[in-house]
Image 1 (cartoon, rainbow, N blue to C red):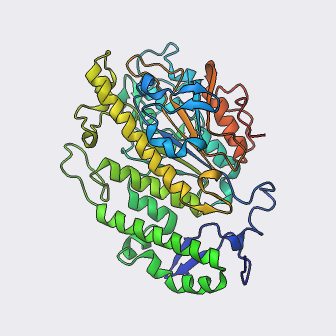
Image 2 (cartoon, rainbow, N blue to C red):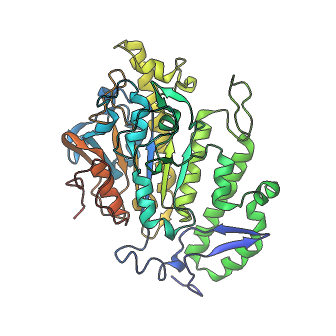
Image 3 (cartoon, rainbow, N blue to C red):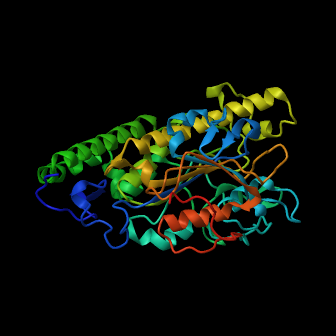
Length: 441
């Protein structure tokens, strides 16, 4: 590739007080990550996506073993990415179970999901669970990026009060925990999440009538002259995606004042699918620009009772999950499961569309999608619905259905992911080591 000058990785477009991160360009590769990533030119990004209320497990579980398997009904939307998937059976979060603490499985499922720790049953200020895997990874590699981690969601957080059988709302509203007593607040407003990546608070709010791209246009034009043909194309594609996202955020920003007894912040989209996809787009840009390498996304808070009328389901999600084998409720739940799976497929599409070297951004990711409950009707926490997308820069053998013994700690998978991502992680929560059989070598 011809280019006039090598660029440092932390190159920004600047203008009118704004600094805008850039995607990984070919012109940066000789200097980028040489010391810390000797075996790959690109960093590994990790994402952890939580959905509530479990799944209809007979429709979730694929058939087969190893490379010989077929996608299930629920996972059919992921067909285009089958060769980049690893689907697991047998993984458990033991501390999602009561273990003597009585009711409250939904609060426990969220708070233990990424921690592998038992939450202290309290509705007061003395909350305690454990550090989550995303924050453990961020502790190890977060100093290499603008944001150590990015926490996103769709439902507003509540960190006070009783949300589930004597458990604090903090447990139901958060999957990311910086320390055992400190949940990481998630951003649910797409515009504010966008500003965390590309604008500073205060100034950005006053300037947003003018596109951030207009502010950095002059610097972008100068940079384009320094780049080779491939990098010019990548830069143009990236700037176009940022422009399109800005326009979508502006179109969708509204206050959903029809929701009773709920103060919805300005800028929250009315449509659930639109909201979810905007957040997935922001995660894609965050990873593409290396603004962060660690993210979490809660598709809803634990025990969410949202309706999914866009797929013909009028009943509340949590209410339906206690289906008592009613075939109509099971069908409604299956539709919700498929809808959420299709939104995950959208995210994988976006990651796969970003070229990085000879591969794609998805190749350099480890994206976990799952829930801390398997069968919500019975509140089970073993054999969880867990799927992992991406190969971690080729370190993970993908396109596999992997069976593990019952009660294998989910945290063993997390420790493996952390090590692949470059974090010096040996244990987390109730892990007993790494998860066997994942390596591509």
